[in-house]
Image (cartoon, rainbow, N blue to C red; front, side):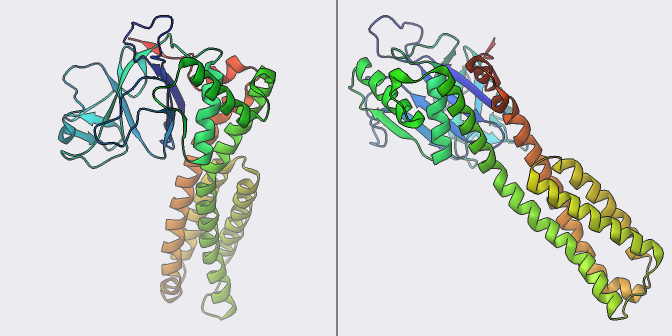
Length: 348
């Protein structure tokens, strides 16, 4: 699912005229794509020179994220960090919280191998009352975050020494360029339509690798049927009624799975049915004369592996479908924001 949260660089001391605007985070827990929109002005460049303190949207294609307010959790001790088998970010062997909550700090890193030089970013505490530049709302920041995910890269907004007005103008310009209208003319209907279009694009892009892998797996399963047919034609395999029936059933299940892959509907169920049919065919293949089975054994094993791949791909496909479903169906901005967790920050 997509989770979102804000952090407060002012540490609770934001006042009128301050430029310590809140950061916005958006994280896809399935793909692990991560966007941080830093709006804090007046930051000093890092001593290493890699961060000039600019405001902007910063994108990472794979990020490990956790949350904690435990004072013993220290980003300055990178050798104590690890990733557990569930893919969770851990400190000293203990997994951090995986959902954002008010008052917790954000810890994030792109590394899954930790040593004394590994960088773990520690964010400010999470807030439920973000301070944003004039006329800027969560819907605008989500639009920019989605754009970063689609393009696979972030964008700089202003230099660190810009004014709050400069930052608001830069954000409005960016939103306008994404929507294709002047900011002042953009309605909530425009924003909702664009947000849903972005989500559909993100979902399609996320599904594509699984779809390509699954389609290849189906072709590999079909090779077993081709091999059986070839051996029958060459007289190497004497068919029987049960074998022919099982082969015909698997062929039908492959065709059904291919149709599901094309339509994008019912793919997990189609692959589950295919797996059952493949098991039934395996039983019939193993019952044929030993010489014939030996000739088919390699293809049986390869097709078994292909079915496992297809099952894993269909599982991921369904997970992606599920996590974006509510955002795609949203009828209002509020429904969209709720679907990505903007209104769901927990209180400790």
